[in-house]
Image 1 (cartoon, rainbow, N blue to C red):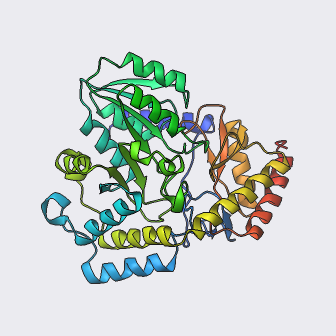
Image 2 (image 1 turned 30 degrees about the vertical axis):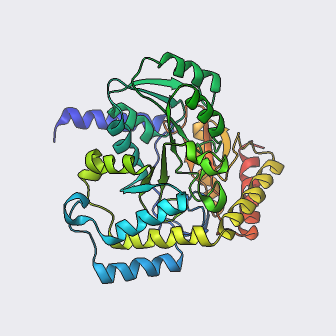
Amino acid sequence: MNNTLQDFLKGQLDTLHAEHLYKPLTTVTSAVGARVRIAGSERELINLSSNNYLGLAGDMRLRQAASEAALAIGAGGGAVRPIIGNLQLHNDLEKLIAEFKHVEDVLVFQSGFTANAGTIPTITDADDAIITDSLNHASIIDGCRLSKAKRAIYQHCDMDSLEDALKNAMGAKKRLVITDGVFSMDGDVAPLDQICALAERYDAAVMVDDAHGSGVMGKNGRGTAYHFGVHQKIDIQLGTLSKAVGVVGGYIAGSSALIDFLKQRARPFLFSTGCPPAVAAACIKGIELMRDEPELSEKLWANTKYWQEGLQKLGFGIGVTQTPITPVMIGDEAKTQEAQRLLRDEGILALAIVFPTVGRGKARLRTMPTAAHTDADFDEALAAFERVGKKLGLI
């Protein structure tokens, strides 16, 4: 092994440890649900760290659909989709999502990250301009880096800043505004109605990464664009299959021309094997449940209200969240990591989020109520948060 490389890596890891930024992986040894078992713990923990919004990751109906598809069709597709790996299940999933989202067509990618990394550089070039929110997801940032287009960053959800950026980009051939629908670390929501109005005024297209809005916002979880009633004004919607749907993957929803062009030129789609039959079938079942059982979303929001009000009554700050994403703001990285450890000892899985996921000095415990939790789960967790909060001087 090259000593120079190894010395560099060891030095970087030592720095992460010294600055309380090193985070080991948590290994789950049970099904993912409201309570889980993790390696190194003898007890079952209340899981407040999952993106499993609707509790579908462990749903027996999704498990059954996955099992039947694997037995009937196989473990994999055998090739990338543009060769012979395009399964009928892939087509069925995309058709179902398109109907659910009220769009002309959909293309499923291996993840939301690859959907952004594949779409943004494919539809923009050096004559274009991308205008992006300062707190957009890392996959949007990397997608923009892969593009040859000029980039402008506007201040987070600041419409004056966005308008200034649009004015400055009027010389570009195309203008593309990109924003998260729901911002994953703070839980606030982009003002899509205002963004669409500005985009229309300055002849710009709009792309919304709705990974954390899918299954959460809008009627039956159709997304943030539907929450604001502007879905017909959004040119490109990104959704995920790994959060509320409970499986894995991402998709781009939009016009038939957009999807047809991505099939011809989006590199992650062209050069990666499509999702296995089990994944596609489980995703189909998850979308069907979102469509047919609105009580799942209703339960999520009721649980969100219960959890957030309980934290605030104890004296914890939860920032500016407008969604189930519930950051317990602490600030100090070392104290946040210690809070995670103490809560785990209390039987609560609430993971610390530190730099570079959030800015330095903005560390927090990112908690996530789901539709699968009960009031008893939350009461037990709140009691633990109270004990840990008092011990660390947080409340």
